[in-house]
Amino acid sequence: MVKVRVVLGKVHLEVDAEDVKSSVKQLSGFMDVYAEQQCGACGCQAVRVEHRSDADSHDYYSVKCLNGECGAELRFGQHKSGKTLFAKRKDEQGNWLDHGGWMKFQRQPRRDE
Image (cartoon, rainbow, N blue to C red; front, side):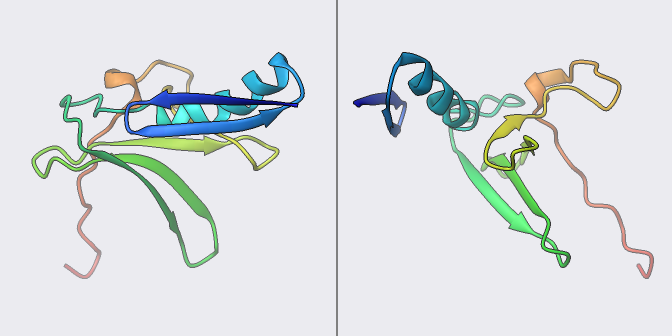
């Protein structure tokens, strides 16, 4: 058993692994999320990981820009195993998204507005 530590900016990751391949497999799942140290849309270094759930108990994961003028978000999909995430950098047709997948969302008016 070996302990592997990696520092990504302000984030320190540590995994226990049997071998090199196991350590890479474990770390890659974390690094896809925590390697995002700045907003891909505006370059702001104030970002945070977020989780939210809807009324049907669906979970949503992202990294969000804290720059009030930007507010872009990089969303994550979930692998079928349900234990790891991946950055959504392509659209539904498989085309690469601008800004590495970071998108600014505008609030849609509700029907009663």
